[in-house]
Length: 248
Image 1 (cartoon, rainbow, N blue to C red):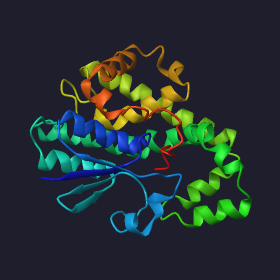
Image 2 (image 1 turned 90 degrees about the vertical axis):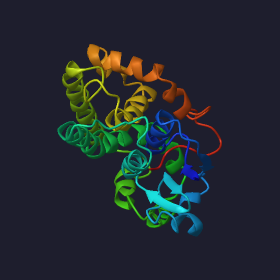
Image 3 (image 1 turned 90 degrees about the horizontal axis):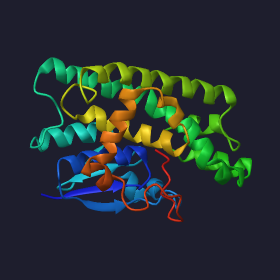
Image 4 (image 1 turned 180 degrees about the horizontal axis):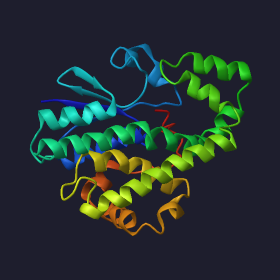
Protein backbone atom coordinates (compact mmCIF):
# COMPACT_ATOMS: atom_id res chain seq x y z
CA UNK A 1 0.00 0.00 0.00
CA UNK A 2 1.41 3.36 -1.06
CA UNK A 3 0.01 6.72 -0.04
CA UNK A 4 1.54 9.94 -1.38
CA UNK A 5 0.22 13.38 -0.53
CA UNK A 6 1.00 16.30 -2.81
CA UNK A 7 0.49 19.27 -0.54
CA UNK A 8 1.69 22.66 0.65
CA UNK A 9 2.56 23.11 4.30
CA UNK A 10 0.32 26.05 5.14
CA UNK A 11 -2.49 25.18 2.72
CA UNK A 12 -5.68 24.88 4.75
CA UNK A 13 -7.02 22.11 2.51
CA UNK A 14 -3.74 20.21 2.85
CA UNK A 15 -3.94 20.60 6.62
CA UNK A 16 -7.42 19.10 6.60
CA UNK A 17 -6.17 15.94 4.90
CA UNK A 18 -3.05 15.73 7.07
CA UNK A 19 -5.31 15.81 10.14
CA UNK A 20 -7.26 12.80 8.90
CA UNK A 21 -4.10 10.91 7.93
CA UNK A 22 -2.76 11.56 11.42
CA UNK A 23 -6.00 10.56 13.15
CA UNK A 24 -5.97 7.29 11.23
CA UNK A 25 -2.24 6.83 11.95
CA UNK A 26 -1.55 6.10 8.29
CA UNK A 27 1.93 6.14 6.79
CA UNK A 28 2.30 8.43 3.82
CA UNK A 29 4.96 10.01 1.67
CA UNK A 30 5.14 13.80 1.55
CA UNK A 31 5.37 15.51 -1.85
CA UNK A 32 5.66 19.24 -1.23
CA UNK A 33 4.25 21.41 -4.03
CA UNK A 34 6.04 24.78 -4.11
CA UNK A 35 3.29 27.21 -5.01
CA UNK A 36 5.50 30.27 -5.35
CA UNK A 37 7.40 28.48 -8.12
CA UNK A 38 4.16 27.55 -9.87
CA UNK A 39 4.61 23.81 -9.35
CA UNK A 40 0.82 23.46 -8.95
CA UNK A 41 0.45 24.71 -12.53
CA UNK A 42 3.18 22.54 -14.04
CA UNK A 43 2.07 20.06 -16.68
CA UNK A 44 3.30 17.14 -14.58
CA UNK A 45 1.10 18.18 -11.66
CA UNK A 46 -1.92 19.07 -13.80
CA UNK A 47 -1.87 15.51 -15.13
CA UNK A 48 -2.77 14.23 -11.67
CA UNK A 49 -4.88 17.22 -10.60
CA UNK A 50 -6.35 19.22 -13.49
CA UNK A 51 -7.69 21.79 -11.03
CA UNK A 52 -4.14 22.94 -10.27
CA UNK A 53 -4.66 23.12 -6.50
CA UNK A 54 -3.42 21.16 -3.51
CA UNK A 55 -3.78 18.61 -2.05
CA UNK A 56 -3.80 15.49 -4.21
CA UNK A 57 -3.66 12.02 -2.69
CA UNK A 58 -2.11 9.27 -4.81
CA UNK A 59 -3.06 5.80 -3.57
CA UNK A 60 -1.21 2.97 -5.25
CA UNK A 61 -0.72 5.17 -8.30
CA UNK A 62 -4.32 6.43 -8.53
CA UNK A 63 -4.85 10.15 -7.86
CA UNK A 64 -7.74 11.32 -5.65
CA UNK A 65 -8.48 15.05 -5.70
CA UNK A 66 -10.44 17.54 -3.56
CA UNK A 67 -9.71 17.54 0.15
CA UNK A 68 -13.24 16.63 1.27
CA UNK A 69 -13.38 13.78 -1.24
CA UNK A 70 -9.94 12.62 -0.12
CA UNK A 71 -11.02 12.48 3.52
CA UNK A 72 -14.16 10.48 2.74
CA UNK A 73 -12.05 8.18 0.54
CA UNK A 74 -9.63 7.58 3.38
CA UNK A 75 -12.54 6.70 5.64
CA UNK A 76 -13.93 4.27 3.04
CA UNK A 77 -10.62 2.55 2.34
CA UNK A 78 -9.21 2.62 5.88
CA UNK A 79 -12.23 2.25 8.18
CA UNK A 80 -10.10 1.40 11.20
CA UNK A 81 -10.02 4.25 13.71
CA UNK A 82 -13.27 5.63 12.29
CA UNK A 83 -13.94 9.31 11.75
CA UNK A 84 -17.56 8.75 10.72
CA UNK A 85 -20.41 7.73 13.02
CA UNK A 86 -22.15 4.42 12.38
CA UNK A 87 -25.73 5.67 12.52
CA UNK A 88 -26.95 6.82 9.05
CA UNK A 89 -28.63 9.91 10.48
CA UNK A 90 -25.47 10.88 12.32
CA UNK A 91 -23.49 10.35 9.09
CA UNK A 92 -25.92 12.65 7.29
CA UNK A 93 -25.47 15.24 10.06
CA UNK A 94 -21.69 14.98 9.71
CA UNK A 95 -21.90 15.40 5.94
CA UNK A 96 -24.21 18.39 6.29
CA UNK A 97 -21.55 20.00 8.48
CA UNK A 98 -18.83 19.11 5.97
CA UNK A 99 -20.86 20.63 3.13
CA UNK A 100 -21.55 23.80 5.11
CA UNK A 101 -17.86 24.11 5.97
CA UNK A 102 -16.89 23.77 2.31
CA UNK A 103 -19.43 26.38 1.21
CA UNK A 104 -19.24 28.99 3.99
CA UNK A 105 -16.18 29.28 6.27
CA UNK A 106 -13.63 27.73 3.89
CA UNK A 107 -14.05 30.37 1.16
CA UNK A 108 -14.74 33.09 3.73
CA UNK A 109 -11.42 32.70 5.54
CA UNK A 110 -9.55 33.19 2.26
CA UNK A 111 -10.59 36.86 2.17
CA UNK A 112 -8.84 38.11 5.36
CA UNK A 113 -6.09 35.50 4.87
CA UNK A 114 -5.23 36.59 1.33
CA UNK A 115 -5.37 40.25 2.33
CA UNK A 116 -2.99 39.59 5.21
CA UNK A 117 -0.45 37.42 3.42
CA UNK A 118 -0.64 37.85 -0.36
CA UNK A 119 -1.12 41.54 -1.10
CA UNK A 120 2.64 42.27 -0.90
CA UNK A 121 3.24 39.63 -3.58
CA UNK A 122 0.56 40.92 -5.93
CA UNK A 123 1.32 44.59 -5.37
CA UNK A 124 4.82 43.99 -6.73
CA UNK A 125 3.40 42.87 -10.07
CA UNK A 126 2.21 45.00 -12.93
CA UNK A 127 -1.44 44.68 -13.84
CA UNK A 128 -0.44 42.77 -16.97
CA UNK A 129 1.65 40.31 -14.97
CA UNK A 130 -1.15 39.77 -12.47
CA UNK A 131 -3.76 39.14 -15.18
CA UNK A 132 -1.36 36.79 -16.98
CA UNK A 133 -0.90 34.82 -13.78
CA UNK A 134 -4.63 34.52 -13.11
CA UNK A 135 -5.21 33.41 -16.70
CA UNK A 136 -3.23 30.24 -15.93
CA UNK A 137 -5.50 29.19 -13.08
CA UNK A 138 -7.86 26.31 -13.88
CA UNK A 139 -9.99 27.33 -10.86
CA UNK A 140 -10.66 30.63 -9.11
CA UNK A 141 -9.39 32.95 -11.82
CA UNK A 142 -12.26 35.30 -11.07
CA UNK A 143 -11.70 35.02 -7.32
CA UNK A 144 -8.16 36.32 -7.81
CA UNK A 145 -9.29 39.06 -10.14
CA UNK A 146 -11.89 40.19 -7.62
CA UNK A 147 -9.12 40.39 -5.05
CA UNK A 148 -6.87 42.28 -7.45
CA UNK A 149 -3.36 43.42 -6.65
CA UNK A 150 -4.44 45.55 -3.68
CA UNK A 151 -6.63 43.04 -1.85
CA UNK A 152 -10.29 42.57 -1.17
CA UNK A 153 -12.51 45.56 -0.40
CA UNK A 154 -13.77 46.47 3.06
CA UNK A 155 -17.21 45.21 2.04
CA UNK A 156 -15.76 41.85 0.98
CA UNK A 157 -13.92 41.54 4.29
CA UNK A 158 -17.05 42.50 6.26
CA UNK A 159 -19.12 39.87 4.44
CA UNK A 160 -16.45 37.22 5.02
CA UNK A 161 -16.26 38.00 8.74
CA UNK A 162 -20.04 37.81 8.98
CA UNK A 163 -19.93 34.28 7.50
CA UNK A 164 -17.18 33.30 9.93
CA UNK A 165 -19.20 34.70 12.82
CA UNK A 166 -22.22 32.66 11.71
CA UNK A 167 -20.01 29.56 11.62
CA UNK A 168 -18.80 30.12 15.15
CA UNK A 169 -22.36 30.63 16.41
CA UNK A 170 -23.45 27.37 14.77
CA UNK A 171 -20.50 25.58 16.29
CA UNK A 172 -21.35 26.94 19.74
CA UNK A 173 -24.88 25.57 19.47
CA UNK A 174 -23.80 22.19 18.07
CA UNK A 175 -21.18 21.70 20.78
CA UNK A 176 -23.94 21.78 23.36
CA UNK A 177 -24.67 18.18 22.34
CA UNK A 178 -21.16 16.84 22.93
CA UNK A 179 -17.50 17.66 22.87
CA UNK A 180 -17.40 17.45 19.05
CA UNK A 181 -19.54 18.84 16.24
CA UNK A 182 -21.46 15.57 15.81
CA UNK A 183 -21.65 14.55 19.45
CA UNK A 184 -19.26 12.22 21.23
CA UNK A 185 -17.11 11.20 18.23
CA UNK A 186 -14.38 13.33 16.66
CA UNK A 187 -15.27 13.19 12.96
CA UNK A 188 -14.34 14.46 9.53
CA UNK A 189 -16.47 17.53 10.37
CA UNK A 190 -14.08 18.54 13.15
CA UNK A 191 -11.08 17.97 10.89
CA UNK A 192 -12.74 20.02 8.15
CA UNK A 193 -13.33 23.14 10.23
CA UNK A 194 -10.04 23.07 12.17
CA UNK A 195 -7.86 24.73 9.46
CA UNK A 196 -10.29 27.65 9.14
CA UNK A 197 -10.23 28.25 12.89
CA UNK A 198 -6.43 27.98 12.96
CA UNK A 199 -6.20 30.47 10.09
CA UNK A 200 -8.51 32.83 11.98
CA UNK A 201 -6.07 32.51 14.88
CA UNK A 202 -3.19 33.32 12.51
CA UNK A 203 -5.08 36.39 11.28
CA UNK A 204 -5.63 37.71 14.83
CA UNK A 205 -9.35 36.91 14.92
CA UNK A 206 -9.48 34.90 18.16
CA UNK A 207 -11.59 37.66 19.72
CA UNK A 208 -14.46 36.41 17.57
CA UNK A 209 -14.90 33.34 19.81
CA UNK A 210 -13.62 34.76 23.09
CA UNK A 211 -17.14 34.78 24.57
CA UNK A 212 -18.07 31.41 23.03
CA UNK A 213 -17.05 29.03 25.80
CA UNK A 214 -17.82 25.82 23.94
CA UNK A 215 -15.89 26.87 20.84
CA UNK A 216 -12.96 27.94 22.99
CA UNK A 217 -12.94 24.59 24.81
CA UNK A 218 -13.27 22.72 21.50
CA UNK A 219 -10.24 24.56 20.11
CA UNK A 220 -8.22 23.68 23.21
CA UNK A 221 -9.14 20.02 22.78
CA UNK A 222 -8.24 20.15 19.08
CA UNK A 223 -4.79 21.59 19.78
CA UNK A 224 -4.14 18.94 22.43
CA UNK A 225 -4.78 16.03 20.08
CA UNK A 226 -1.65 14.28 18.74
CA UNK A 227 -3.03 14.70 15.21
CA UNK A 228 -2.75 18.48 15.51
CA UNK A 229 0.99 18.37 16.10
CA UNK A 230 1.40 15.83 13.30
CA UNK A 231 -0.70 17.77 10.79
CA UNK A 232 0.80 21.17 11.48
CA UNK A 233 4.25 20.14 10.38
CA UNK A 234 7.30 21.99 11.59
CA UNK A 235 7.31 25.44 10.01
CA UNK A 236 3.89 24.98 8.43
CA UNK A 237 2.55 28.15 10.01
CA UNK A 238 5.60 30.24 9.17
CA UNK A 239 5.77 32.53 6.17
CA UNK A 240 8.99 30.92 5.02
CA UNK A 241 10.96 31.22 1.78
CA UNK A 242 9.61 27.97 0.34
CA UNK A 243 6.44 29.57 -0.97
CA UNK A 244 4.21 27.20 0.95
CA UNK A 245 1.49 29.78 1.58
CA UNK A 246 -1.83 28.35 0.50
CA UNK A 247 -3.34 29.37 -2.79
CA UNK A 248 -5.96 26.65 -2.65
